[in-house]
Length: 216
Length: 216
DNA sequence: AGATACGTGTACCGTACCGTACGGTACAAG
DNA sequence: CTTGTACCGTACGGTACGGTACACGTATCT
Image 1 (cartoon, each protein chain N blue to C red):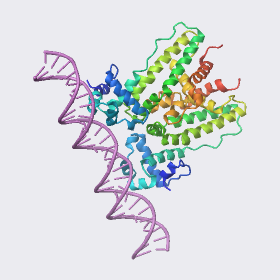
Image 2: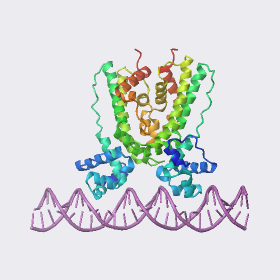
Image 3: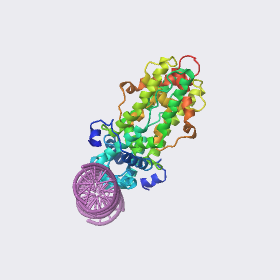
Image 4: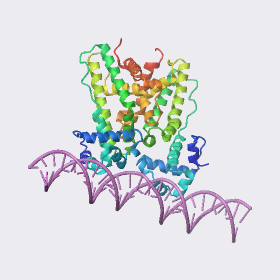
């Protein structure tokens, strides 16, 4: 079963890559990070990765399959630490929230994430945007799920009060990310204050508690 | 003076387009909205707009100049209403904030804005992203300036309390937009609730007042 | 040793598209 | 009537890139 077939079947879940393929995909990531999509040509990747174009097509089907594989590979690298500290008091729970926000910012502002988002967005057209969906389901939705679980735990223990966990997460996201992500995607640079991820996460969580925290 | 020369000089300000050129740019916008960047070819635009490729190159220099002209043209269409209601009580000021947030969402979620953002992001590479900068300075920065003025007025009249107007604006932006913008750029669709711009703007402003409003 | 499988390197084809050149048309000014 | 300007339509060169075919090298299995 080829990868492109798997992609067409919307079924990209249980795909594993051999070490050799992962090395090639890492090269592809490097080309993408500095150079954008147009820098990732089949000939260029084959030259940089010391592999043949024929192998690329054997492994990934076609160029779209290659791009999808790059996204899937990068997404497979983010680990979800096991539910951190099931028994936590209010202070450590708040610290966990801050840590989550910090990691969120670290991921979104990372250059590989920026490069992949640029790639997926550039490919997205009106209707039919497979790369975008892939990035959403393998990236954003996973993070959102983890965040919802974290927030639900906080509500269950009486630290937070809200009706819709998803809405609460989106507010936390907005408070932490603001317009920094889109500005980076457009080529702007983050200000020094915005590069203090920990500080940004703390103020975001502070404001979040002002909105959804139980009365002091 | 050609447009491309003006672009290279970072000076794209006092550029005006003839009605004929604007009609062509409108066609280009249409091609961009449904089809993405690759759908906007010089031959295709010439065919759809009933103009010659030679005219395109005479007017816009090259394809990059054409893309830049499309962005500049669209940016030139957003008007800034004169400072609304200099003398306003607390209720109408809050209404003005809601109106601003509503318009912000309407712009960001509009399909032409999404298409242009996709275009600019797709063109942005590591270093050197002229389209992105153009969209930032002609779009985002203008909106941010207006928002800062509005917020400063609110602080001056005692409705709001904050130190940095820019930071306050970013919080308002985050509360209103959340992750909807990036999701749309990636090809996701807005939920029904998210399409209720007025309602979204109201809750965003409510939360904003919880953070920066003076004590009730 | 031979066979099968896998991968590299290279040459090649077809195509899409940018950019330009050129012929033809309409129109205004002298 | 001539000249200049602006534009359309089309055809063509150059090129970059996706995709394929093939020759050669290497390892593993029998």
